[in-house]
Image 1 (cartoon, one colour):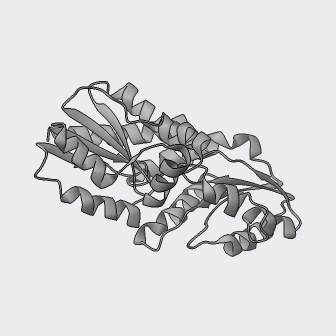
Image 2: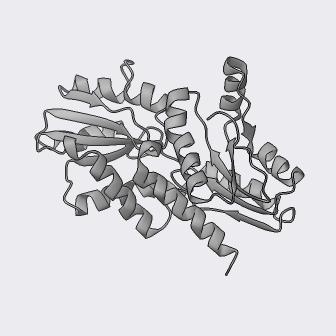
Length: 271
């Protein structure tokens, strides 16, 4: 669904995503999360905003698709008389994108009767357990003694980058010693992952994005044919490589976590 969801109401949930220019993946992930919010909270209008102006401009030029940035979406909500506004980010963690969003939202705290910024995916202890359960379940078919299952996270320079290590620890604790979590723009990186995998007796490597959307990073940095892609790097080490191009937003268990965070934000008004 490319347009904001139109419905007359004084209550709105603004789903804020980084965005992607990959149309199919966008609607299977971001769109699916938004549809879940519509289903769970029928009294609220659900609208869309992206944080990446580059992607917004690209979609406008390429497809003629208009998507609001965060400021535009907040101004629109104010101008149409929304009184209760929940901002639900589809971010994985509390990194720079989320912090920038929080700063922008603070500017509007006096413009709405009720305003709440919900949490990203990996926030509370229970979130990590639920995400671990979700990715274990969706990869069970690849969980074999001779196969290393490697997840590509984005990574961040912010302190929240430790979520990847934390998730890795939970997977190992659960006995999934052949599951590895790395990042494309931080630590642990592909070199770290290769070192870990080489310590095992694996013949095959399965690569999956630990990202809401299977966009540019998944298609190019992970599964691309460039010599520096994760696929090529593991193939150079002699492994048979399988790439799974499914974003986390396609997973119903992951989407449920977002709707639970939205519920917590709604409940905050009653406390």
